[in-house]
Length: 246
Image (cartoon, rainbow, N blue to C red):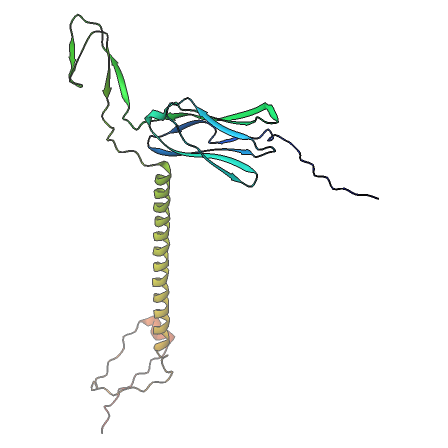
């Protein structure tokens, strides 16, 4: 049995997801901003050609590179007013084997939004003589249109609703905490009073059932005065106490 190795080269065009433009479609950007643009495609077999075209007169150089099986064209552009309306078209072709196949994607158009104060248009009524607009210090003719720059709004912007809600929530929490602290202090004071009362009752000794009478200098007998009811109910025995002699 004889064997033989064969090498087969498959020709193919990139699939329908290529080329890929980033950012794709319309772009709105501020002047003097850096715009990073990329156009990539599968390399395929044979390798496809990637071209970026634009209607701008000045030449822009795109950098070419490849990563694994991906070909890439890139351009970092500082956008100015001159790039307003600019649009780039990225196209992939295979002129050797797939001449009839070609696909493309677009970056843009680019809209440059200038940072200017809003203006209002003033249309003058037709008159027979020229008039002078005191706000612009210029002379206008009948039927012309003036543009007057509005003064910037100096009114303070209102607080966002989220900040107001947060402040109200903090105030409510502070009020509740203060009430709890007052209740805690009152309870502590009441507890202290109870403990003090218990301490006093424990420190005072109970009176003894039998107590010794102390001598006194008063030797005069005082007859108790009793009502008739008391006299009939009980007998009273009174004795005079002689002062003790040493």
